[in-house]
Amino acid sequence: MQTEQIVWDQALIEKYNYSGPRYTSYPTALEFNEDFGYPDLVRAASQYPARNLSLYVHIPFCHKLCYYCGCNKVITRHRHKADEYLDALEQEIKAQAPLFNQRQVTQLHWGGGTPTYLDEAQTRRLMAMLREHFHFADEGEISIEVDPREIELTMLDVLREVGFNRISLGVQDFNKAVQTAVNREQDNDFIRAMLERARELGFRSTNLDLIYGLPHQNRDSFHHTLEEVLKTDPARLSIFNYAHLPSRFAAQRKLKEEAMPAPQEKLAMLQDTIAFLTGQGYQFIGMDHFAKPDDELAVAQRAGTLHRNFQGYTTQGDCDLLGLGVSSISMVGDAYSQNQKELKAYYGQVAELGHAQWKGCALNQDDLIRREVIKRLICDFRLSFTAIEQAYGLNFSTYFAEDLKLLQTFIDDGLVRMSHDGLEVVSTGQLLIRNICMCFDVYLRSKARQQQFSRVI
Image (cartoon, rainbow, N blue to C red; front, side, top):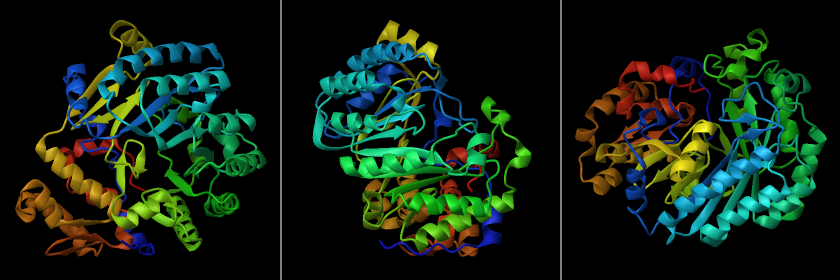
């Protein structure tokens, strides 16, 4: 599959720029419930024993509060709290690992919070725990999110030594006024030095995270950040749309709304970002992700083998995903499961039961069918009716009669082409892929659900 150049249609983008899920899962986390318990997770773990395993470890601690952040985090400078957390994590690992003792781990990701909150000894301890209790493949994908503000350059050597081969750096913006406004001031030269050191050490891939829509940003200032970022030659870029939800995230109340770019300016920033990055040779993977054409994500997308899970786009969607740590989410068998979200509750349950499983949901046959449809659309921008019919024994046009009626407005507006055997999302429609996927989401048919999500752009 070859990707087209993205075409911007302002009127259509404004027409469809309403709230919707990001579809890192289907059904979304809003459907998780406490009727789904630990025995359900154990059953799900035995469902596909031949699948490889992907591990996600959540480290909730941060040294300092970034005002825009909506992640599950604990702000503290008391490093001993991380030791206490690792004690609980070790108990959880010992409880969960036996469920997967025949599996091979081909992917590991540490997220947060700030995984590099852990010092060298703590980092080595956690990696040793994981390697002791799980079977790691020789050539796995092992990645970590890095905060460039509270880390020594030599820590990259430690990360490489314990096995990490990919890093994701939270940059957000190179503009000092923006950094000050969001309480995330950083040394831009140090970021460049980090990326250079990562290359020297042989990290396989570097990803940089940026955010548009923050106070004091505009099209010109963000373009300057993009120019500076490209000088570091990252393999991947994630350009996130800032969702201002101060009623849900108290820290966001510290941001001055009058300093934020107006909706039209925000759209102009995105338009410029897409035009600039694709003009510089990056492939638009979808939503907020860009990758060099030779990066694994870009190669997988062109081959039609790209997947999507709670960590976003991935090349390893055929794995079961086990989440470890507070608030982490697992995708195991035909089920989703989430750990306790509050640290106190996590500690209490691990001490009492050994695990932290809190809620989740088991997928029925309709969920599995719709998940596959949504995944193929959001990853490939196209869908084969025959592939779905053969995989699930159904007639597509009959089974999805109501959904295709909802899709008709996108077809009429030229955003989606429909043939006798499938759908193709044209380049303009690719920016609105979340909206197109929403047509196949039965849980979203009740309008009240939409208010739970951010705008698609």
